[in-house]
Amino acid sequence: ARGYLMVIAGLGTVYGATGDVVEAGAPVGLMPGGEMPVGELDDAERTETLYVELRRDGKPVDPSGWFAGQAP
Picture 1 (cartoon, rainbow, N blue to C red):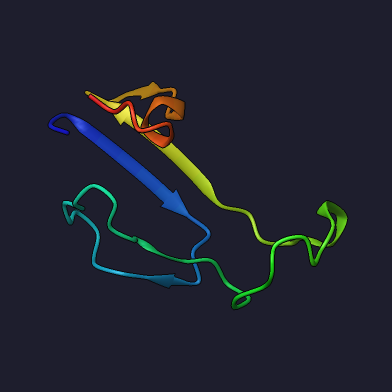
Picture 2 (tube, rainbow, N blue to C red; picture 1 turned 180 degrees about the horizontal axis):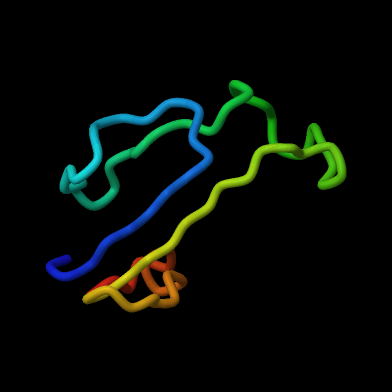
């Protein structure tokens, strides 16, 4: 959406380039480590971290609505 900036860090593979506008539902990349069945590792064994920051007009915004499909 216009005026929003999303910062994502921790991906092993990134699709696209900095500044690209991404369509709703489009993948932005893959976490490192390859595919792993859900539940194969417990939380103590997981080492990858995905950082997501959403800003609107330069100010931090809670991204939970975006992940729930309620983006403006």
